[in-house]
Each structure stands twice: as structure tokens, then as C-alpha cells.
Image 1 (cartoon, protein in one colour):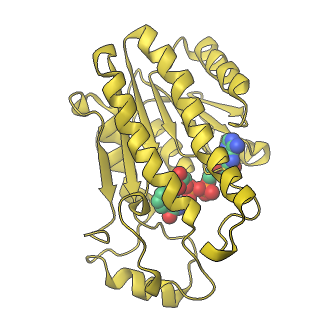
Image 2 (cartoon, rainbow, N blue to C red):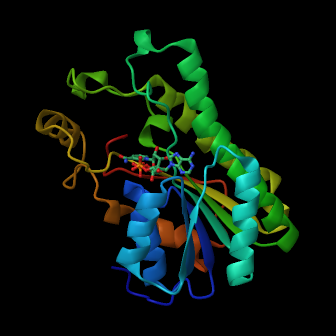
Length: 257
Ligand SMILES: NC(=O)c1ccc[n+]([C@@H]2O[C@H](COP(=O)([O-])OP(=O)(O)OC[C@H]3O[C@@H](n4cnc5c(N)ncnc54)[C@H](O)[C@@H]3O)[C@@H](O)[C@H]2O)c1
């Protein structure tokens, strides 16, 4: 739990993928430090659960399909109407189609293109729409989610037959990290910071034989809990990182070294 419960007081943070493994934790931790949060996700049912669980007057939930730029624009407008402004965007959604995750030689061209579109395209759209608003306001912070697999190639030997590390993921995550740098450079004189968090694997009922091999490549922690990302998120959202832009912070207990 963060020590300073007013760290993000007066901040209005828009979080995409708010019902996901990482997004849900991000919503909780931002509320814990005094921010107002717009929790956006395509999953209406999970948003209802989130809203009931957190029961906060500083939380607005919005059903949003990031595949529609018009819907993103409307969600931004609804957020400004509710809270007066938005100060940060966190992209923690993970759109993918039903064929996502096949082994390299089984991936079909149409699926590869669709998954890049779904994931990279939606990250681009939300970044573009929020950046336009932030540039106008001369303030704003955008945080994207990369991955260790946007930085290094997978060690395929640690994956059991039941698992894969998708080629689409490598393409998407390396692109997200570079999009972050591109936008940071473009917006550096506009008061808009753009950074990326690249987590290692997060615990989510992975098979034991995989965890053993994965953890052997880490320090004492091994695979992460979502809580391990709290302080990096809060740092990047807070004034403590006012001189930090275009950076990709890897949080992986040494896996990628
Ligand atoms: N979980 C991990 O181990 C891990 C590790 C490194 C990086 N990441 C990255 O963190 C981010 C979040 O991952 P996660 O594990 O929390 O994913 P998740 O699958 O648990 O959650 C993703 C959320 O995105 C939402 N979503 C999907 N399509 C959408 C759309 N079109 N519009 C709006 N919302 C949509 C889903 O409903 C879901 O709530 C991703 O970018 C992922 O690549 C995850």
C-alpha cells in the first residue's frame, strides 16, 4: 500500500483495460492515493463488479470499445464533463482475437494483421486522442504498457508445450515502446510526458513447471504480483517524475538481464 495517500490528489486518471489483471490493480492504487479515476473497459459486466467492489465517489466506470476512435473521443468528453478535466491516460487494455497466441508457424496472415490492429491500433488511437487534448491543455501524462518481450526475445526453452509466447506480442510490445519514445519526442515542448512500463510476467495461475523455469531466471522475487507495479505507476503519474519522458521502465526482478 502506498505511504502517501494524497500523492495524486487533484489528478484525474483515465485507465483503459480497467477490468484486467493489471488494470484493476491500477484503478485501486490510484484511488488509494487520492486520484479520481475513469475506469474504461469493453467488459460491461466486470465494470459493474469493479464499481461495486471499490464503491468510490471518485470512480467513474465507462464501457468502451477501444476499436472505435469516436467512442474514445466520447469517453474523454464524458470524463471531462464528470470531473472537469483529465490529467493522465494509462493504457492497460489487451485486445486480441480468438486465434491469438498460436505458435509461430500456425499464425495466419489475417490473424497476425487483426491482432496488431486490435492492440497496436487501439493504443495508437487512444494515445492520439488524449495527446491532442493534453497538448491543448499544455499538461498531461501518458503511460503505456510494454513488456519484457518488447525488449528481449523470449527464451522458448522455459515454455512447456501447453504454452506459447506469441509472435504478435513481440511485434506489438516492441512497437508500443517505440511509439512511446516517438510521442515523447513529438510532445516534449507541449507539457505532455509519455512513458512506458514493461513488466515481467505477472502471476495468474501459470503451470508450476513453467514458473520454476521462469523464476530461475529472476532474483529472489520471481514472477510478479500486480502490486510490484504500484510504485512505478505512481512515480510516473506523480510530479516526482516531472523530468522523465520517453522512458521504458522494466519491472521484472532481473528476468531480462
Ligand atoms: N499479465 C502479464 O503477465 C503482463 C506482463 C507484461 C505486460 N502486460 C501488459 O499489460 C497490459 C494488461 O495486461 P493484463 O494481463 O492485465 O490483460 P487482461 O487480459 O487481464 O486485461 C485486459 C483488459 O482489456 C480489456 N479489453 C480488451 N479488449 C478491449 C477493447 N477493445 N476495448 C476496451 N477494453 C478492452 C479486457 O476486457 C480486459 O479487462 C497488456 O498491455 C499486457 O500486454 C501483461
